[in-house]
Length: 365
Image 1 (cartoon, rainbow, N blue to C red):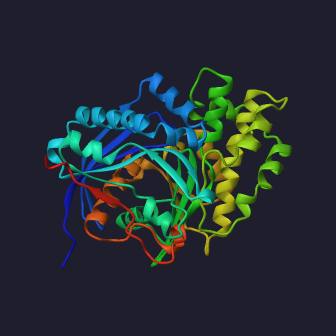
Image 2: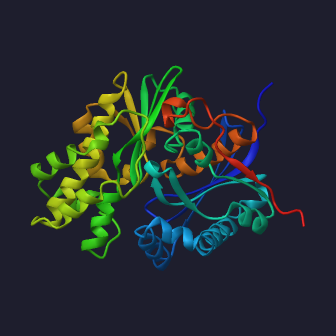
Image 3: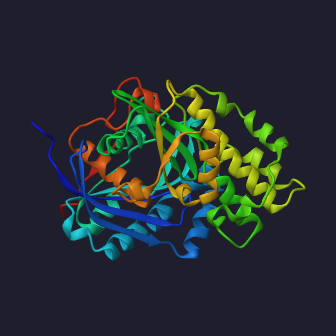
């Protein structure tokens, strides 16, 4: 007997901290049907700046003020859901929250937002806490995407082995070959580039890689980057956006132009992905690039030239790359409801498949 389908809203806000992606889909955690119900709630600059500054704080400070910060993020999601106009059509809401720290060495992954408070505000049950149980069971807590990426690859009948690379703040890869499912973080995605733009300019990011495309790559800093121990680690493995902070501080203070530093940081993203491809059991026939990075035309050009693998563009597919992660949260939520695993030994390192999320029911009183 097949698993039950539900109308579920998935919400996701990534490390770029620009806003909240929202998708309403029908899914049972094995299949998914879209109704083109997508909405992006853009944070005010003041909210984004607050979150970017907060992400630089120590975990003890976050924990000390967690109730206040949870309320801020929950209120933002409540407003986003109201503006989306999808709530009346949904049975459940998947709520990932705002990742603010992910330090697996200390078994610490902090996502801001209160699913209990949100459930009471919207008067619907909320599925959340997707990483906690995985970490308690020996996993690295990320990436969460592989099981949904596997569905996408099978949905479009991509020749296997195939891969999906999500370039958000951190880049992660999913590799699918029949029943083989592998996932791990590859290295920096947009975070080092965005961080440098915010440090040296009045912009949040380098649109289309325009500045990077005009710069010269520094071989010195590329060689320094390639010495990072994370790139040499066996999989499964996951990253925090701060894990390359020593490297970032060195290159930020170098006597190089903004264009040269941006070109070098972009190349670090590309080479992290190349290193990940080399760790796979077999070279993929093709790759789909999603996340904010797919909009960076120069980054895609460098990936094509470096990987020598076919990159499949959005115009060839019938789903929006902008909302893959929001759909992912809805998909995972359905898996939690239907008692299906969300993370696996070859995606996070857990000893056995784990159902990672938790259902927060609305207060009956």
